[in-house]
Length: 485
Ligand code: ADP
Ligand code: G6P
Image 1 (tube, helix red, strand yellow):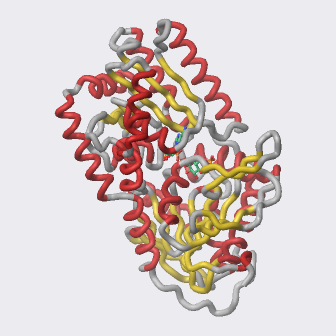
Image 2 (cartoon, helix red, strand yellow):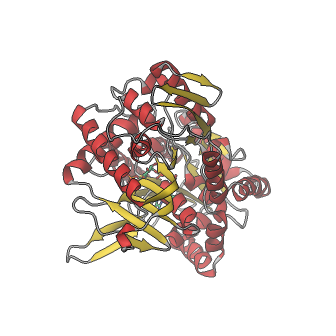
Image 3 (spheres, helix red, strand yellow):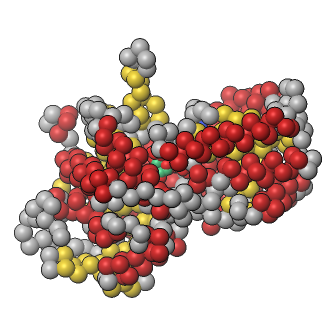
C-alpha cells in the first residue's frame, strides 16, 4: 500500500493540523505547534493512539503531502487564498464565532462566505472518507466543520461519526439569526453523537433542533426521522481538559523551576506577580481586566514594583477587522496605563504579543501569584486548568470568570463577573490578600479536580459515548454525494 493510501480506524478532523507550516523570508520551511486549546488537548490525546488527523496546514495554497508526525498520520487539506478569506476568516471567524460567543461584537453575514464554507467542509469530508478504514471512528472538531458529519455520512455510511464543540453553543434566539441555521443543524445531525463543553450548550443545541427543525426531542436526544434516515442522536456535555501528568511533570523539571525564578527576578521580585495569558480575542475580556487593574493602580491599591502585571496576548486572526480593532484598543490602554503609572525600571503592565514554547508557559504559570482569567464567554479556558496543574507547590490563586466552561468545575477559584468592574477589582484584591494557608487549600482542591478529570479521561468518555450511540439501521442503497435536501 502506498503511504498516501493508508487507512485508519481512528480519524480526527479539525480545521487546523496540530502543526502549522511556516516559510521564513529566506524560503526555509519549518513546522510549529498550531495555536489554541483544541490543538493542546487533541495533540496529547492522539500521541497515545494510532490514527490520522485531517486538517489545514495554516497557509494558503497547495497542501503538503501527507506525512507522519509523532506517531500520527497528518493529512493536509488545501485552502486557497479566497477560501482562507471567506471560509476561515469570514464565515468561521466573523459569522459563527461572534454568534456563538453572545455577539460580543456584531456578526457579518455574506452568502458567498457560506458557499465557501460548504465547499471547504465537503473537501474535509472527502479527505476523511479517503483515510478512514471500514467501520472507522471519525471524530470531527469544532465550529469550522459543522457540515462535515452529514457529508461524511453520505460518503461513508459504514463509519461512526462524533463531533465535539470546543466553543459555546448559542441560545436559540441568537443561533436563529443565522440564515444557514437549518443546514448547520442538519449537518451536525449527521453525527451519531455530539459532545459539548457544558450541559447548557447541549441543551441549546437540542432546543434549536426542536424549535427550528420541528424535530422530536427527549432529554438529551434528538429524533431524526426522514424517509431515508431515521435515528436518534444524543447531545451531551463532556468538558474538555488537559494532560495533567505531562504538564505537571514539565513544571516540576529543574529547568522550568529555575526559569520561573529567573522570571520573577527579572521583574524585580515583586510581592505579587499577576498574569494574564490569552489569545488576543475579544471573548477573553482583556479590556475589562485592564480597566479594573487601571482603577486599582489609580486608587493605589496596587503599585509597581510591589505588584507587577504581565499580560501575554497571543497573536490571533490578525486579518479580521474586529481583531485588529481589539489589538489597537488593548495596546492603547496598556500604553496609557504605563504612561501614567510606570516608574523607571518598573512598568505597571508588561505586555507581550508573542507565542512561547511550552516550558516557558509552564515557568510563567509557576512564577505567577495570581492568574487572571476574565473572559466574557469561553467554551472552557484551558489556561485556567494549565495554571492549576503547574502549581504542584499548591501556591498561586486563580481569578476566574463565571462565563467560562472552567467555572463549572473549578469551584474554589476567586469567581468574578468581568462586566462588574467593582466586583472584578474586589476579586483581584481578594486573590492578592487571602492568607497563603487558605489559598493552598483552594489550590489543592482545584488540582484534585483537574488531576481526576484530565484530557485522557475526556477523550475516553467522548469515545465511549460515541461507541454506545444507538446503532443505525443499515442503509437501503448506497447514497450519492449531495443527495440530501
Ligand atoms: P483558546 O483555545 O480560545 O485559545 P484556551 O485557554 O482553551 O483558549 O487554550 C489556549 C491554549 O494556548 C493553551 O494551551 C495555552 O497554554 C496556549 N497558549 C496561549 N497563549 C500562548 C502563547 N503566547 N504561547 C504559547 N502557548 C499559548
Ligand atoms: C479556539 C477554537 C479552535 C481554534 C483556536 C485557535 O480554541 O476553538 O478551533 O483552532 O481557537 O484559533 P485559530 O483561528 O488560530 O485556529
